[in-house]
Image (cartoon, rainbow, N blue to C red; front, side):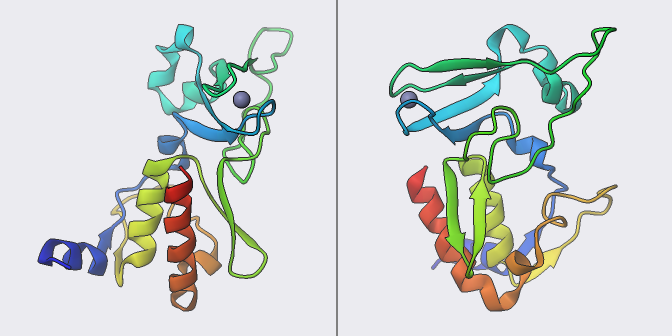
Length: 172
Ligand SMILES: [Zn+2]
């Protein structure tokens, strides 16, 4: 292990990421062929996709390169045409179509470790591997990492969680 790697394993700085930073492309299980499909802001609505909040209510598209299956998602709207429901970013199902995330694995006895995509796995892995975790100076209602469940942050689970994260990366 080189010095650079050793340092990054030791110390991790929370940059204040939110889950929506990783929601631009969400890998899900294709409802038709069971392969890996992707959920993203519909290409016709790229402009809305630039803001994290607008992105949540922008029309989304499901696309599977394996079998060609596609589907569309649009927010439910009230009488005035404004969205009545804000998707809640969470897992282990995707927030738009409710499909199982592609990247999920059982971990630590009955828990489920999940991620939206490889960049999300990377940040979780760096965080869990770090011996010293520095908080972001201001994270408002809390960063993605501050909201992680206690079992993922526990030193006692570090090896199990890292093993599962590495397996997730291999699945991607
Ligand atoms: Zn498919």
